[in-house]
Image 1 (cartoon, rainbow, N blue to C red):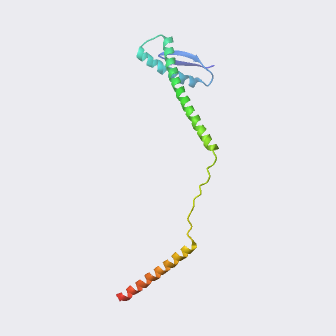
Image 2: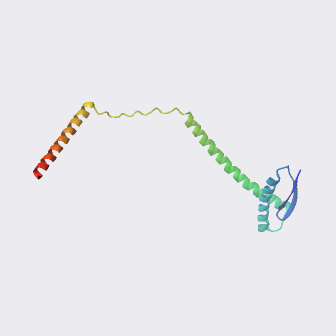
Length: 134
């Protein structure tokens, strides 16, 4: 079982840990050291046990706040998942039927005839204008 030397609040401690957990232990010790150093800066020198207790309580308080935030986030995620599941299980909406007006064939023929007559009149008017201009 490996032993790791950690420093907390200016004091060194030798701690045993499981194989492969050395870096995790060092990271945790650094967090505790930051809290202890802040206490020492604010309060000054104090007994080792009190320093460790206070630093641990401060970390526990921060952890509790994060856990509360995580619970709120998990509740929101669960709520959103329920909405998603409800939408997935909802019956598909009926397709909307749109009425498209259809132009009767007779009207199309009449309009085509009118367009042809208008073109013929325009051509005739152009010819007359050209004759008068010459």
